[in-house]
Length: 392
Image 1 (cartoon, helix red, strand yellow):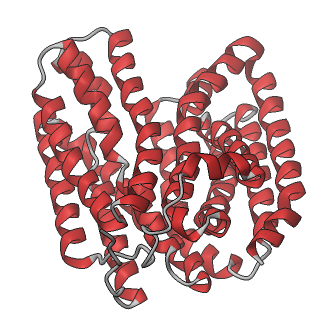
Image 2 (tube, rainbow, N blue to C red):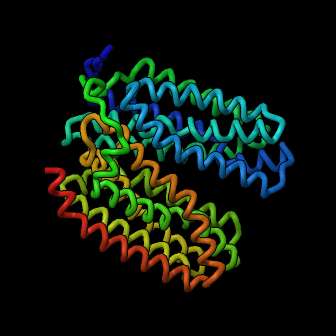
């Protein structure tokens, strides 16, 4: 039996609905930031054991990106988002009520597999739009998600004073609210007939050398970018700056993204995509390197603003770049794999950054980050002609 997609709503309505869903999901995502404290203080696990549970969520997160994209092509974008939000609500209830290590571990993996399931499906829905509309739509989604994340980081610390149980229930309520938004406002956008022409994702990707090169490039980029969130507080502490200074400097990142990203979409919309991505990767490498050599709050803030500009540039082009690479029937799968590079970087980045800092000190970390940015810049530029041919 075959199915066809429902007629899509007007583009602006679809993008607004997806943006609202991403905002609600992110704004209510207050558990993850405080999970290690909940596990050590409320569940009385050792730091090492708690770290293992958090790592289990992260590994599940990698799987969720691939699974979300695959399901988006098989059961539809809308159904996948519903499954993700409803599944994450159930997983969070299980995690918050589990009182044994095996139960906590199973619930942690389930949470990892469901919390981000909506993201590749939502990206696939945007990729289904006509190509000229994608860049701005991806930008709106990214902006809404970052605004929601900023709300979550501001409110989570205050709410935690009233008990970790409250955080779990707020996160559950946000997941259910996001599911309701999807149910009421988000239509199915999967191209009609894509089920009949179903292709297996893995064989296609393994033959797509350009896609494999871009996946490797972005996994390396996210490793470089995400290590900053682990090494920056260590570098600032070594320089005699406390948590308040770190929080203030890191807040600049969220403020800059929310303030500058809409402007960046307009400025970069007509630019050569591979060049934008290459320069952005260079900014991240140089900014991270500058941070390793910084002394004083102002210098650290300058380094954060520099790599934030690179972060914004990558975000503006990311979804549109991978959407252009994807066959129509495999957009969800391709974007799921693309999103998984972020999750890979979230696992490898803290390990690589702290190891390099411990082995070589701040100068070695600075050199490694700067060289990494230069290598990524060169590689992205080299892939530019192939990306241009694929898009046209």
